[in-house]
Length: 81
Image (tube, rainbow, N blue to C red; front, side, top):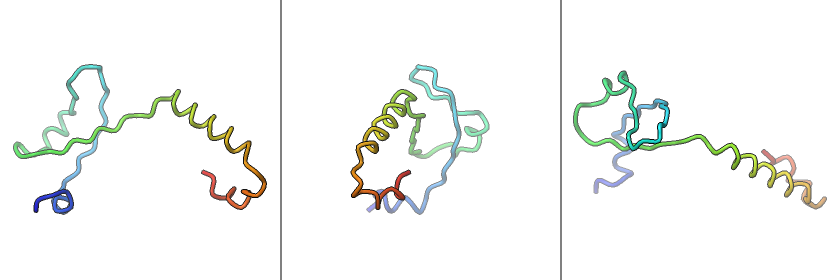
């Protein structure tokens, strides 16, 4: 088959952080590049920090929502994160 589940047994993960510069090129640190195979395929996943303004807005929305929480929902208060 060769789909996603089959490839999970054959993965080697390499993790590093890099600074985004606004260009179309993603810098790979030289020590990481040296550790990579010289040929073959690679799956790239890029994770970025969450926007600070977005995080503040989400927290303010959550707090407003919880302020309007009816007393009948008090059982769920221990589940808050």
